[in-house]
Length: 418
Image 1 (cartoon, rainbow, N blue to C red):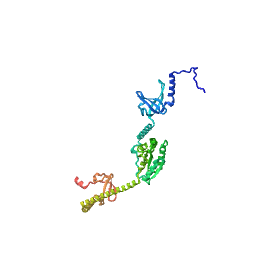
Image 2: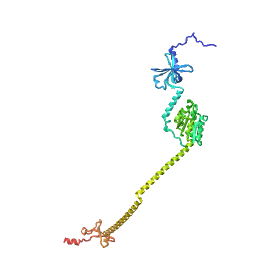
Image 3: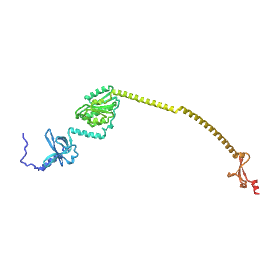
Image 4: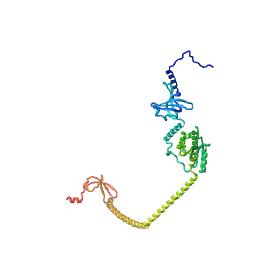
């Protein structure tokens, strides 16, 4: 077996320190995999300098470390500051420091790793959904007073399903339960929970929906902080009761649910009991009896009051006086109307006699005639006529045309002239 031996007899191309450094810098800084990289590790040391943060990120398992820097231009944008002993995730790119021939990670953002990262993502999603109004109390739907069918979304293997069954059977033996099984833990759980909720909605019979899971570690409840599950509960047309984890646990599914309880048993206990319905029924009957009795008492009091007022006003006597007055006014009215009618008849007869006296046809019937010119002017004076003037003469029966042959003045006028 032969090993590689450098050929020392032929001089190789000699690079300067800067040339070698530039070559290595180009390899590191132009590699697309290192232009933007996420690195997780533990902060072993950290110093705040006037130009930025300088810290060392190490892998505690392998005892490997890398120097990191966050320049001042990015410090205000950091989610967290580097502190020794903290597990963090760093976003940045690889840079070479030529003066020392060392590479370092120039960071733009620092995030908490592990539980801290989950907490950050939870808070960011909670803030965004709060801003959208999904957790607004005014958006909560009221539970029906007398549900007939309850839908349940949980795992068929979980103790939660057994607790819910026992509680509902004991409190409300006649209640119809629709079970929609689903996973409640793991990466596939969010999609499975959404599908289970949709099955209940599509069925259309449930009046209330319980979404439940027993207690567990925080990471076991992560599926109930998934945005898909939260929106499925928010969009559900059926009022939703959540019963997830223990008393200390709170998920986004609890916040968006119409009623939040912290255990599956408590969720089932929130369904009204049959005995509660009976108690409400008896209470309503008693309250109705009290109301009706009070109304009857008030009506009786009002009737007595009206009777007292009638006696006080002596209504019968008032009616008699009013009847006498009405009869008297009626007689006066008839007498006045009759008298006025007789007077009107007499006046009408007088007018008729005057009209007969003034009727020109009556005069004509006595042998008189009415003489007019061709222009219908009435002739009253013979001296206004001319010889050979044509005239119209109207008699009581018929008319004819005449022509003036001579004009004779009246004897009264002749005597006056002489």
